[in-house]
Length: 85
Image (cartoon, rainbow, N blue to C red; front, side):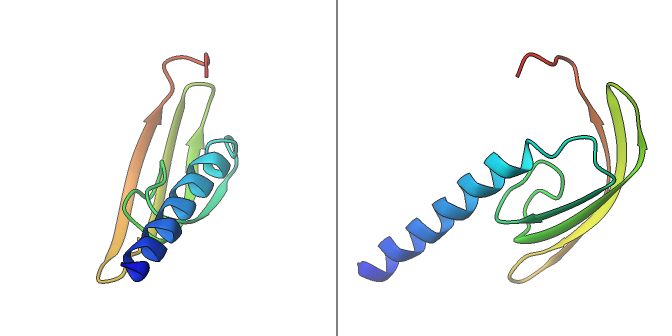
């Protein structure tokens, strides 16, 4: 029971820290994330993404990440509809 509680605390800490820090790092060429579930590399514990093209509302990027049993490679398009947040 204590081990499950400890694992939940670690996972929730990684989730909240990654979402809080990752959202404030917009308009950078290189993006490194440590934590689970971020807005660019998705389902990875450690991820790296590099922007190829950026303008006011669009971004094209490539990257990769590692998970416990798999690796991810990605090419993405990020489109910002509103700057209200």
